[in-house]
Image 1: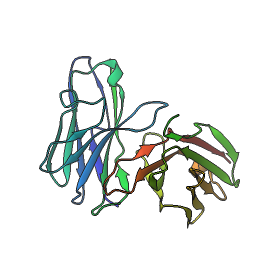
Image 2: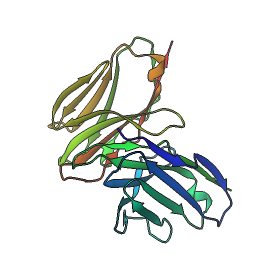
Image 3: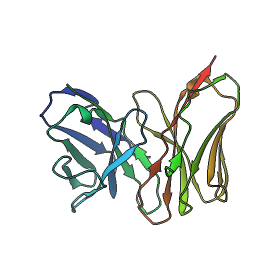
Image 4: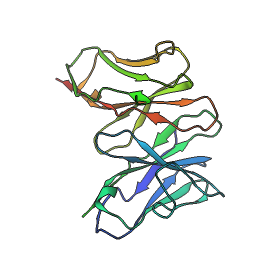
Length: 115
Length: 112
């Protein structure tokens, strides 16, 4: 399976600031996904990012708050904008292998705390 | 009713025990079923990936899917302390790149 690297692995940020999380994959992938994992909650999909098109956001998530870039088939970024303590969470990047019906594989996540 | 129900645990067992982890779901259209293992401060790692009903075995791990009961299980034989982790079930529809629906995860603790 693909090797997925996320940066930063963790950060502590001030309220009102923004943070960009990077996801790098060691092979070309069609689909990249961004999830949020909060304590005691299921992994929640934020958006799906395809190269060359706008990201598709899930209900409850908007582009102004979570802008995503997908400049090529191996890289994506998620920005968490105007952060508040409620944004404290683990943010995970995931990729699906080439071809439909392939399973998703995850990076190790970014642990974000907002003061 | 939530789409996927999973007992959060923790489930504590002695080393060598057989572990049974389970999820129930409500959407009969789910066709692909996955189990992920997540260690502390790590991302979910794919353990098992199955399509439709039946069993799949990989080493000490066996995944079972019973679509008639909307129930999936992961069995771990000869459990080891290194199996201590949170186990997440996930499932999705049979339509190309459809999104995953996750359970909340079960924390497993295997004591030596």
